[in-house]
Amino acid sequence: MGSATLITFIVYLIGMLLIGFASYRITSDLSDYVLGGRRLTPGVAALSAGASDMSGWLLLGLPGAIYASGLAEAWIGVGLAIGAYLNWQFVARRLRVFTEVFQDAITVPDYLENRFHDHSHILRVISALVILVFFTFYTSSGLVAGATLFEASFDLSYTQALWIGAIVTISYTFLGGFLAVSWTDFVQGILMFLALIAVPIVAAQELGGFSEAINAVGQIEPGHLQMVQGVGALAIISSLAWGLGYFGQPHIVVRFMALRSPNDVPKARLIGIGWMVIGLYGAIFTGLFGLAYMATNEVEGLGSFGASLVNEGGVQMLDNPETIFIAFSQILFHPIIAGILLAAILSAIMSTIDSQLLVSSSALAEDFYKAIFRKNASDRELVWVGRIAVAGIALIALLLAGNPDSTVLELVSYAWAGFGAAFGPIIVLSLFWKNITRNGALAGIIVGAITVILWANLSGGIFDLYELLPGFILSGIAAILVSLAGTPPKEVIAEFEEAVRK
Image (cartoon, rainbow, N blue to C red):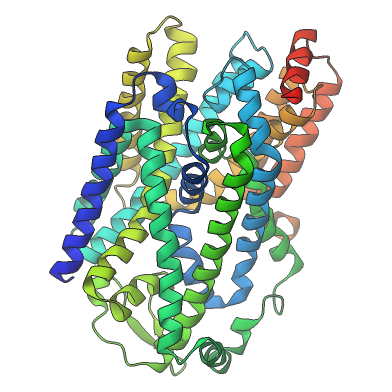
């Protein structure tokens, strides 16, 4: 890697740490640390939600899948865009209002306990356990992805790369909490957005224009331009089902809770969905144009960026399709711009890790430590418990990520499906159905999580369907049936009706 690229990259990392220090100075209580004091502007809320959602998948995974298999891989993007829009349209405003009405809840388990007046704390504890288990493994997979990028780009050993990437992310999350995470995610979201616009545009220009680039793809692999041909109905349904996961992702819905006002939702929705759709298009065209460029140009010296070329059936291809964005950053841009684009990839990874760490630490501080062990704990004490939890959870994730071939990466789809099935139906029902009960919510969370785990370990026929869909459906059915067998307390219904009027 050139020195200009390296310097640019280091400046970016220092910038992220400075945001952490600045946020540390204005974080005074647990609400600040966990929810930013409910003062996020629409732009920050929207871009931080998008950046923490998309992770490295938008810059590495999706372009790589399109590069290797064509538009048939774009169905997940369609499902995610629809799911994200519905989440902003129907959940965002109500959740912002409800979490404030129900005793100013600042975490998802906190909201569920307050919403159902669960004095036994079982709903809070079960919810927090689901969050801790899934997010520890999810965070670990992100650390592996970050380490792989550092290892390929800086000629480091895997262990060195793992620790360097982790230390930067953990430091600003530890210091600044939610504000640091949201502001760094905001910057990272802008960086990802600009990168996904610049790379395909420059690539198309190098190929002679947009039409010429598309024609080149059609000549090399005509099937790459087909979304439906050769794709089974079950595969399309499974891909679209990813969108259901949005309703239950704690690190995304917490942005709704942190908005400064419910009236900011429409503006935030426009920014967030615009960012997402344009970003998805950028990722798709990066993959398509990557195929055309690599097949028609002599490319040398990719090894230093972790990308290498092989010959497949007379067509020059990248050995690892997911390095197409990395390869383009080196081939098409000045070293300083290459450093910025490399920082954009790391941004995508870091922006998800930091959100997961924060949600996990808030589950420990608010939902275990305060709720069960220290009901009278001071805000300062809880902030430091949250910080210590960030370090502890990150350490466990680092240990799990110590093996670069760790099967922990396979748990990413489990985590998305697990959160979507366990929390998604319950959050939606809690916002729109006054008769859902505490036992109904508990049954839904348990049934959703167990269905995902069992379904994912079966295969063949209907079991090839992505486990999120059956988990979501069965969770919702369980919640409704159990709720119909009981009656929520009158004060819970009264509070629900008060929240609906706001």
